[in-house]
Length: 111
Image 1: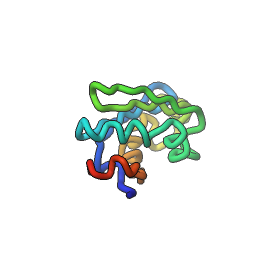
Image 2: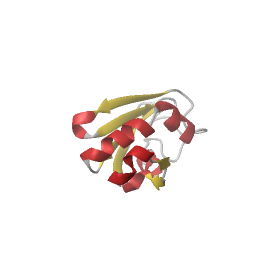
Image 3: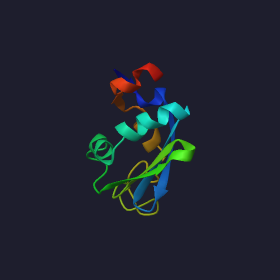
Image 4: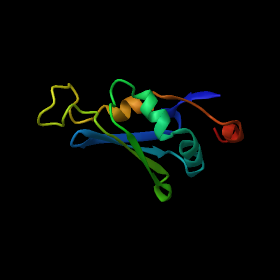
């Protein structure tokens, strides 16, 4: 079963110099394991192909049902020097929530 990430999570993003920072938070505690299993560094890097030129790092925050991603070399040098429309990465969260994810079969009864 495929769903939009926005069905089970919300997100917030911003800038850390040339890196975009994006936190993805499950709406319910039982949905956090889905995020944890499906949203890998590789999946996020692939999703942002062409935008994220550096590596993607993932940090787990299980007590908040959240994952935090740092997308390196994404903002064209950062807010003060970038010519990109979104030099501070504010739209990264909205874009992330449009990601279509495959819910593993053993979690489908939770959705």
